[in-house]
Length: 218
Length: 248
Image (cartoon, rainbow over all chains, first blue to last red; front, side):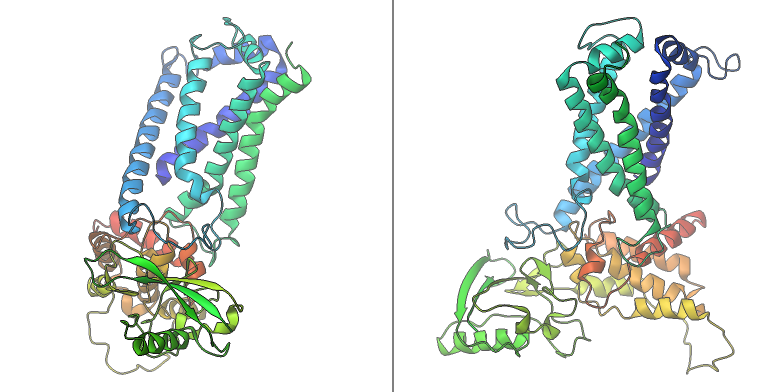
C-alpha cells in the first residue's frame, strides 16, 4: 500500500505542476502536452515514456486497490463485529483522537476511483466532453470547467484526494518505518502530510476555479 | 450518586449476548469502577440473579487483567486501567455502557470476560531472550545509551491488557507486539534474535487473526501505560531489515 501510494503521489505532484502551465495560454499548453509525447525521444519512440508511465501507474493502482480490499475484509473479521456492530454504545462513536481523514480512507478511496475513471474519460480522448469536444486540450479544459456541475464534481474529487493524502502520506511513511514521534499528532510527518494535501488539492483546484469564477481562457 | 449501567450479558461463548440495563441508587464518587461493579453484583446476588462476570486481579493498575469498554472507549474516559478509574469521572444520573473487548482473536468467555490467550502465544513466538543472561551484570560492562534505555523502558511498561486491540478499528495488536519488539530490540541482549523475533512475532500475530495496522493511532491514545506510537514504526523498520536479511 505504502509503496504504490507513494508512486502515485509522485505522479500527482508532477501532474499538478504541469496543470499550472494552463495559465501560459492555449498555444503553450497544447504544445506542452504535445511535447510530453516526445520525452526521451529519440531514445524512446514517440509516446514511449508516457506508456511506461501509464503501465507503472496502472500496476500501482491495481496493487493499491488489491491491498485495500484484502485489508478491509480481513480487518472487518478481526475487529469482531457481531450483527453489523462492534460496540453497541452510542457514545464516542468517532473514537478518542483519530482524524476524519483516517476513517474515510476506504470510502474516500472508492470516490477517488470513480473520479479517476470519469476524469480519464473526459481528458484523454473525446469520449466524455461536457461543454463540447475539441482537438485542443486547452479548449476542452475551458469548455468543461465553465459548467457548474463539472467544477462541483472536480471539487469533490480533489477534496477526496486531499483527505486521502492527509492520512495516506503519514501512514505510508509510518509503514516504511520512518515515524519517530510518540503520538499521532505531534509528528513532523503529520505536519508534512497537512501541507502536502493542501498544496496538491489546492494546486489542482486553481485551474477549474480560475475558469469558472474568473473566466480564464475564454 | 444515582447511575444506570447497560452491561453486556452473555451466558457463555456460544450464547447470543445483549445489553441489559441496571439501576444503582447509592454509588460513592470515591469508588473505583470495579467497586461499583462489585456493588452491582451484590445487588444482583441478593435478588437471586447471576452476577456480572468481569476480569480483575491486582486492582493497582499493574497486572493488566481488568479492562472493559466504557461508553465506547477502552478503559473509559481517563488514561488509566479500569480498576484505577473512579466514579468521580462520571456525573449523577449518567448512563454508562459497559462492553467487553471486541476482537476476532479475543473470544468472549462470559459477560465481560474475554480470552486473551492470543497475547501469550505472540510472546511465546519470540518475545524473550533465548540465552540465560544470569544475574545483573556489572553496569559499565555493557554501556546502553540513556535514550535507548528510556525508550526500551517505556515500551516494557506494557501490561498486556488488550486495550489497543479493543480501541483499534481494525482489531490489530500491533502496539502490543511492537512494544515487545522495541523493548528487546533496543537492548544489547536482544540483538542476536532481533530479526527472527520480529518475523515470528508478526507471523503469530497474523495467525491469531488480529487485523492489520493502518496507522490510525487509537491504540496509543487508549493505552493505560501510554506506549508510544513510534514503536510500531520501529517494528516495521525491523521487519524491513528482517526481509532484507531473508529472515521473514
